[in-house]
Image (cartoon, rainbow, N blue to C red; front, side, top):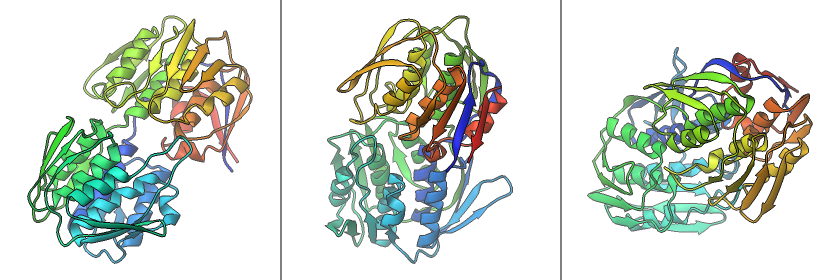
Length: 417
């Protein structure tokens, strides 16, 4: 099993390009099911989750091909299997996103229930209730969602909890429904807006994406298009936090500051100097970082996917910080591994008190989930001596060639088996 070996203590410096956003790419790939025409997707990150989604779509009958620019063309003219099996859904919860498109276009779908995950429960009841409001008949049998509908009909849907994938699933389903659908309390995340832009490029009529109320006027059919996935805001934030923690000076190309305002504000509060243009961000440091308090909340507030990275930053900052996790109940599992590196962290419920230390010491640690892996990489980049991170398959789900990109910035990091 692969592991990362890091020799820390060196500031990051240089320039690197940000990859496409995984959490935007996955629903956009699923949107290919909505039309028999070809959807071409550019700026697709080469990640394990993307490979899993392409495998699922291929099993269903979607023709998948790579072009010379490493983009992907998807043609769903013949969908033979309207099923998302447990074997794939258990490895990636985003597989639930084929439910809405299959049901809208073919009138039937059978998708495995994803269950829970290491960082906490993420139920799909909002997906099911929303599709039922659109006229679907749904039953749960032997761990699968069985959905049927002659044709979905527009409805007024009020979501009692904000859910990104729920908003995306219903938005795709409503694109081919008869009449107009209004989704209230919709997710505000930029990845939802990116999906709406792609759907509109395919001929859908979606308005209000990026606000709490999204309106979708159903159409009879969608057509193919060429679409470029937005940059990954969490990868962007992770590299910025790594530069801040190591006292580095970096430039990220292909990045957008407008979708990362809460993280940039916290980095400035920690003492970093940031500048940005339309598609680039720079960060530099003049002193050791200052501890900053963090409380996670849905977009546009501070993202839960950056909580672990900032805990690593706070671990070597001047002062004491309080980190509060409000989204997932089990998202402090990285604290024990950070403490193995010498971090001073006390956890009580959903709050962690982090007292900055003068230095961390390299050690052997184990990743527990995707963003926890990133926090250990950040800590390893700062720590004296050698840090070995086991179970980095988590990392490969969300970061494209992270050791190669960090090496471009001067990090002493390599992958070992």
